[in-house]
View 1 (cartoon, rainbow, N blue to C red):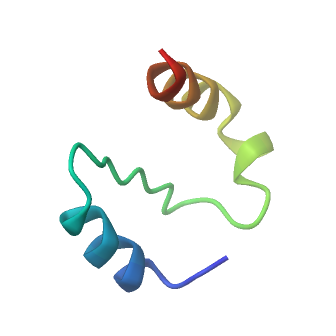
View 2: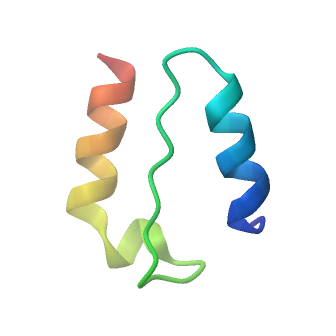
View 3: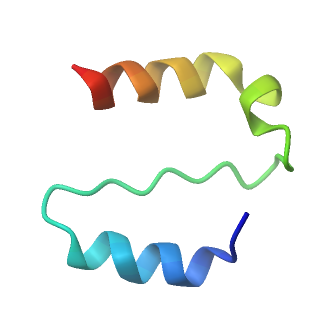
Length: 46
């Protein structure tokens, strides 16, 4: 896990990048927001 600021900077520099944040979750975001994670993963892999 990393602080959000460097992730934001990197996302601004990468073409077609999309930064997805889950502010109400912790290290278990995969399990806390499973529907959102699966939807974003599907969009990324499509």
